[in-house]
Image (cartoon, rainbow, N blue to C red; front, side):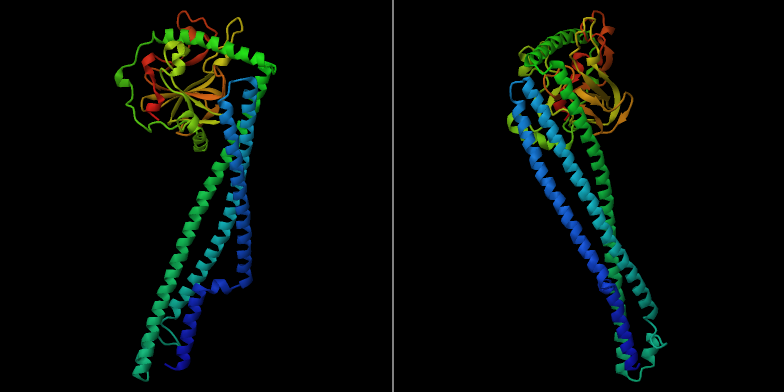
Length: 457
């Protein structure tokens, strides 16, 4: 084998490896330089959005601090309106955060698209160089490596041909490994693109939800101002009226529910932590941590189940609180605690007596029946987003928090029942119902069917 032939083979091998390893950086140089510049510009925009998100989250935390302070003050019309206003400002900042996350995710997709295009180009070059290497590995100057070794003029020439063959094999193996590595990187980036697409979809849904929160919040403020004519005396009178009507309703409801047949012990599901999820998003759960010091818990629970201090003071006709109350701004998304079927929905505020007295009870409510023997109720909502008979998944939006029915401040009443005992009835279906809530459709159950939510959360 002459020196010219060996030199040609060496140059070809070197060229093949260059294509696999560095040709993409050399051809054409200006294209990749531009791509690098574009990638840097995109990253700068992403960093700017992330900084805006960090600044906005500080604003949101400050608004939450104001809400915590307002929640601890004596309830007046001024504090109620202020709470609604601060809640609206907080939601506006949350919308801006979501929009920045959307923009940053879109830029990330653009960045990934450029990276993937480069990887696909590199893979194509690798495939071409690998195929050419395989075609030419055994043939140089029209002779295979074996023919070159057999026809060598000396032992040293034959040995050189053998070394060349081994070098070619090693080069091809290296080239194949490079190609495999680039393919793996491409697969990882495509998986990131898929996750980013899902994140964009989730953020878009979240943005729509937050915008609805804003609308609900504005409507609640307008309603409160209409009811009170912006007079503190009217507001305090409204609260007094609510308390009186609520007591009358509870007296009658407790009397009627005591007539219902108790559920058997076998129908009451075994308690266990984590059987139900908290009925709010992780975002709201983070906000609750700011109230932990004041409330003594991490979940914004303002009143527990059973014979609480508030119940002992004379509330609930002495029978105890039949759920837990979770303090939250008007318009907070309420989520299903477990997959199930919507047993019913309603609005007790629409029911009133011939005298025009209001039914201060659940307000807007949703009841969901689950397959494990439990049922859950979500009350005092400002808006309902599901309908009776609908199947819902764990974490699915049911509606938005409010202060409808008997509520002197915005909160969610969350109740858990043995599903064997819960019924959706109007109180006039029982003999003797006479309160303004007589025609209101609502969940009712025998007393032993009311379960402590904390035992299942």
